[in-house]
Length: 314
Image 1 (cartoon, rainbow, N blue to C red):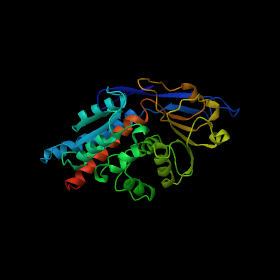
Image 2: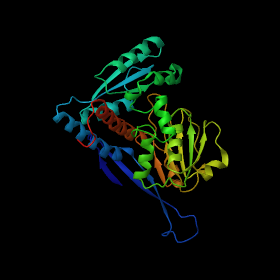
Image 3: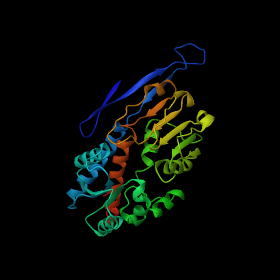
Image 4: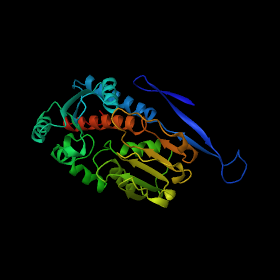
């Protein structure tokens, strides 16, 4: 078990668990190693580069970039993802602000607040957090594309679909980055994405197509796609639903990315039974989330350079 120290002072572990060889051969040969791949250690290196870039910009006389999160929620307290983002901004020297609106807020009030953020030259990038009932797609469409730090605006999604992106946005790319860091081959792999087409699952599916993978998309986990899972080399689950996940449903040696959304205030540890079957588990919590935050800040710095016309190599 190897310990990894994060840029913001936390320590995480990457666990290797040997999986028995079922081929009937010598137990010491041909065995697979099931790994819990924690995204924190990958995020550490990205945040280090972000911090160096922000420091360089400040030495050139520029103010730090500013990230604003527009959050619509029934809970005013910070959730783990917001706390992670706040701390990452602090250690990177980035200004971070939150505009909170209760779920009962009038949509027009939220839209006007977003319009003000679009027009504010002090705001570098905007990230949105809202449940489907608030019409997140409508808010995303009202976001200025040049301040869309996650790449959700329709114009930026169009660039994603046509593979003509101007930069690497955070959403979806963090999963690809984690897989590549773990030496997972996407070219020729069969990738199964379970979740909403307008969310992480849909974006990740498109990115995998650009990586020359075969992709199957499935919207709901309430009814598992049967024997299809047995053919998936990489499986991403991005859903609000929490049905039982039988490890026997997965293809032996597959890679599992758990991006489900736990009920508010509930923290769920990864089910280590999955490691009896899968070769790599990117768990919840601690898997995709830290890399999402780190790549979001990297995208923010790229937006900042474009807005103030600073070459990337300066």
